[in-house]
Length: 362
Image (cartoon, rainbow, N blue to C red):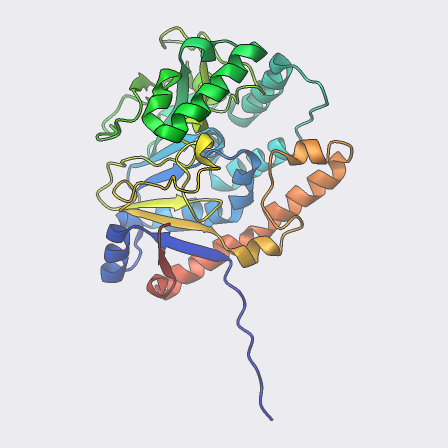
């Protein structure tokens, strides 16, 4: 009698830049190698990585305590802030619970949507601003965008004209969209100050992140034009209108000043530079920027097993607006299932067999 053994499909896809591949082949993946952790924009997709965050922040990185930079845009910065405020288990639980139970209704105005998100942020980090900014182990860096010219307005016509202008200029080259926006890097003033040397597509403004202005930068980092109002009057920042960091840094294709490995828990297995690059199949991540990146993401097989065959998405608020309990149930299933991602990551660590799973970044 013969038996056919069925190998369980992998829950993770593992991709790496050439320097990260080289280091892992020589030494395996070790916690002391990791010096930077990016977090992408992408709305509720971030809560679908809860189990992976538990494994990375709760079990892996504490094996070699050191100061590390966590750099996030939009939900990426909120995700890291909650972990820094409450610890990984309570921080990820709080983020998932608050996000899952947000309530929106048809026809909401920009200020109303912004108020809902500000209320969520208050519950997410309220009273923990100092602990986040002055965290002993992690240096939080928040990415936002400073609007230029007609993108300063929240009125429909200027926003539409801005979107058309950004799309048109971005198709030619990313740098031409600098007519409409500038990158903002807000981070604590300490010895781990990140400088993005070599990134010249956009003018980059560096701002001090303090307990006094943390909320302002976090809400700005997630303020989607046409959905939320632009953020103004951030303490200690130049006057202007600040918006979602994902407009420029959607998946954070940046020249990270890493000397080891950039460990990137991501919701997909590719890096799209800006939100406006999503439909541009030829716009790829810069391989020099990502040379030290180890990208860990859910596999296609894992996603196909989820209720909607994908992670939670912002469009679920619209598509399931008439049945919020169904959306909540689906999102909770996705969060619970994400434990598999963390378990598999820890299994790879224990066996140190990353090399056989490594694929090049695409």
